[in-house]
Image 1 (tube, helix red, strand yellow):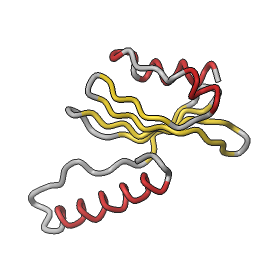
Image 2 (cartoon, one colour):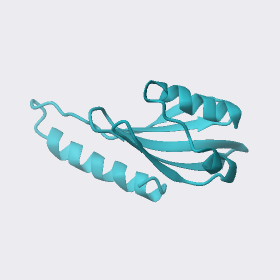
Image 3 (cartoon, helix red, strand yellow):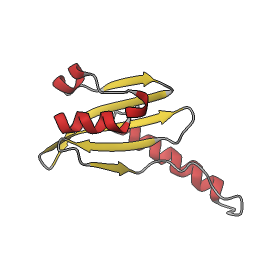
Image 4 (cartoon, rainbow, N blue to C red):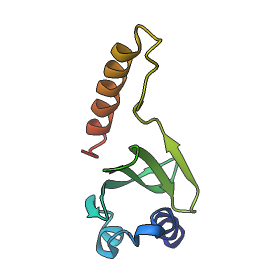
Length: 112
């Protein structure tokens, strides 16, 4: 878990945000509200590899959904669309539908 926590800390190093040691030890879900961020996270395992998955939103940036594995490897998961082209007549409708589906999936993961 050392590489996982180091990778998370590096991701948010500019804001000095780290996972709570007791949450890592107990593999407990949590929420961090710091420096304009709201970060909801939980722990899990996939194919025998432990990970922390987090949904992070900042008041001035895009939302992101990330997974960091115990070996420090990370992957970016699907996030909601932030913008659409005014030239696309279905853009706004597609954005609303995509965002609704995205937030439903985030909620099902227990990250909201």
